Length: 515
Image 1: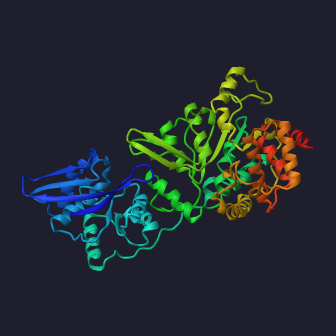
Image 2: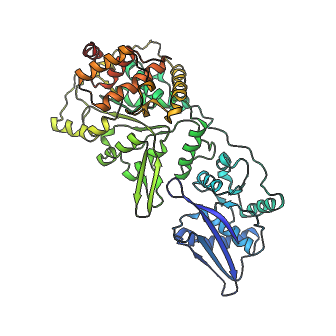
Image 3: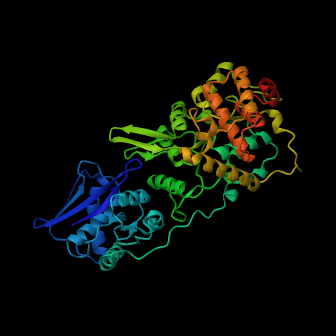
């Protein structure tokens, strides 16, 4: 007798065949197939769950095999499939139809939720399995792909009852699909109108949200870097159906998916603490779980006070930022995880934060300031499209009575720009302007003759590298999209050049870029 289960590894994982054989002999349970401690301990949990659920545990020798036997099996999610297979082998439950089961058992027989249910359903459907038994808390998550052919159970007794329905009718009772996240992101993260002034910073965040561009904001403490950065989710465009499933699957594998709203419909916003390890940011562990960069897939990874993060962590971000994914190689195997995120960095100008501040003295040496910026590395900063300095003067003079634009108005422009990008970039397999590479054809960008001329002059006078030139083109394309313009005009390129520079005065940029 057998039933299917799932072993997560990276983003793919594998289907595990749980086989049970009952034979005469000294009563006991043997588990083969490279089972870890949590799987081997399931023997005692299952015995107690049988007794407390009104079932009889076989008084014979029980052999449980987890195939393929050469791959390590981890976690308590095998409790329910092993219990169901033993019940079927002892003629206490029907199991003639092929199905998949996941769930941890309590001693009382209650089924506890597990991670990776959406990935398990996806892999099962690829293998031709169409029926699923999952914990009640994971039911809505399973229905994202199960199309109502799943049974969400809260106990071992309910699992057996669901199997009887499956045996009699050939399918589980239909269930309704999950609802998207109902929370109001503007309420959760605040509104752009809460911040007074900071027009250039707000404009840069709008461009970043529209095109998926990476952004660095730096300035003295109290300038508003973090406050405004945390309001970015309020203007982001919602995910497409494909992106929602992709993002939800990663959160499910990491065990970071809530049961109240299992379908992630809004771009994730991840803000890890600067003490996070490389494994926590990049992913890894025994099962190669997704890290913060993968949990930020199709969303934002916010590193507040970026120079405070470990140098090896910051330097390791270069490849994911460039490639949109990360390949993790460990002794147990290799896995490639998606990590197409938007990087948002903030930083103080120096370790003490007083550099350039009026009526204040900075005690940092030039070497300390240089070391402060070297922690991020030139290679990572070169991949950041938008750089926003917040000078001390910009902190003062913010009009108390001034009317500030609300996130709702900015979000409307961002959504319209995102729709233009999706329509234009879909034939090229690209989602956002921030992912346009230097090798893409010029017709993808739509530069007119004056914009090409001003870009060539600026690149020559400002010493742009090939990557910097491509970055300016991407940002200019997004600026044009925000205006609803098909062509990238001269003023769009000039604004993109301004956001590429570290200087605070845009007039030197405009003068340098003139023919």
